[in-house]
Amino acid sequence: MTSRRKKTGSHRLRGDIASEGLAFGPVFALRDSARMPKAVKSTPIRERRKLKQALATAREEIERLIEQAPGHGGANVLDVQLAILDDKKLVEPALARIAEGTPAWVAWNQTVATGDDDGDAVGAGYAAARDSDTRDLRERVSRILAGEGAESVPYGAILIADDIAPSTYLETDWSLSGGIALFGGSVASHISMLARAHGVPMLVGLDRAEFVDGAPALLDAERGELVVNASAEELGEFKTRSICASERQGREAMYLPGPAMTPDGTRIRVGLNMVSPGELDSLDPTHCDGVGLVRTEYLFQRARGLPSEKTQFAVYERIVEWAAGRPVTFRTLDVGGDKPIANLSVESEANPFLGVRGIRLALRSPAVLRMQFRAILRAAADGPVRVMLPMVSVPDEITAALEILDKARDDLSRRKVRCGEVALGMMVEVPAAAIAIDEFDADFYSIGSNDLIQYTMAVSRDARDLSVLVKPDGTAVRRLIETVIAHGRETGREVSLCGDMGGDPRYIGMLLDMGLTALSVSPAALARTKATIALHGGGED
Ligand code: PEP
Ligand code: MG
Image (tube, rainbow, N blue to C red; front, side):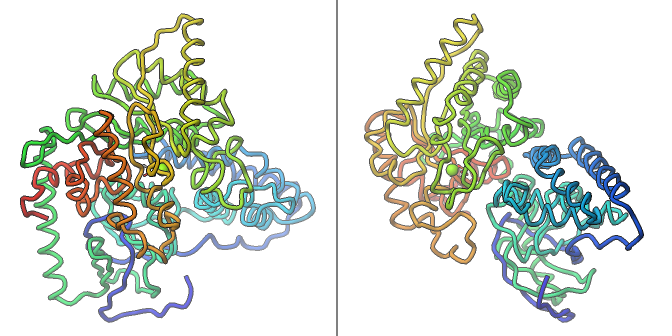
């Protein structure tokens, strides 16, 4: 946290909205990282033992957190850290440095912060998307080596930091309100995803400033502002808005039980986007039209090594059983880009977003895709299941995937294993696919607006500085979406949209006017989406 002045009067800072909502509470600024341990005389053997003990303690702490973690992928994030802890490429270079006489704390921080000299350690090997997990782990082990306890965030606080670790987020009880404002961070990060799923208000890219701990703050993640030491008038207005917001949430919740219907009687199917079965416990299947997107890559991220067919089947089956007859759409592994997976994704690509990701990677690892298809086909014996291919750019990718699907079916019939039929659809998230959609013979289309916008506008999903270019209702993106909807209508194929835009009330009306009749949204956006549909053209916000 650099170049900040402590502010004591009322002031207003701008930030980008990562998770919508309003929160009022005392500011709590998280310090940057663990302090150095006191220098004491030691030996390489003692330092080696210290690091091993610290790693074991870190493992115990993380496992405890996993047990307590709420749904929405929280435990998955921590499982990634356990997998990193298991990686010999992480521990061995640190132990080698210790053997050369480097103290454990220094050896650990050097290895994890920079990657080893041969470019093969964590800093190099885990690429950008793993940075927050790796940093989190580095700080946890550093803190343990320094003999310090974990710093906990007080209830109801507005947490201010450069960035926060997934475990800090998960260790904090957000049920009593509170919120997050980060100088760094990005709307597309793990933490932002968790905050949205749990309804915790959050801003990222906040203007730089330094605060007095405990100063009262209004976190306005509807307008994108943090107001510290607000005036009585500002506080009054904020409280009125908070009351209106909770009343609105109450009204929106009333739309949950019924089917989503526009005022002119058009039935809109609203599915859920999910990443892990842990989310299911707090959700009622009767409130949605099934699951429109299961991001199965999180299952792979959580596994240490590739998950077996049995492990995958158990997870897929649980989701299908939960849906109780409603369709579940499993997206095959979407690895690469911002979602690397050790031992599977191609490392050291100059631009992973334009590299071997999604279906491109799956087709290079046909055995992995075939095993995933087998697990999905087996789950399809218990209810309606659809399969969806990510990042399709040319029709041949569908043909190649279909061949692998056929082989997976043959595998199961040879083994006499019970399985069901699946429809094979595709994500439309590469502009080339949207433009030439008539050449793609898929059973259904689901528009991935997050990537479609990024590739159409040539703006990375987490480039905050360029967010002004990212307009989901801009002409170019709109035309692509219209092209897909029109082709779906002409050929009788379902077109849905499962990117964040589908759960954003600012764009739902536009999508309905274009003729879209299916959306898939995050659980936190479900009530609002259904209410927005019901009131479309009816005048309420
Ligand atoms: C999308 O790109 O819109 C999408 C739904 O996929 P993901 O966000 O998982 O890339
Ligand atoms: Mg995508």
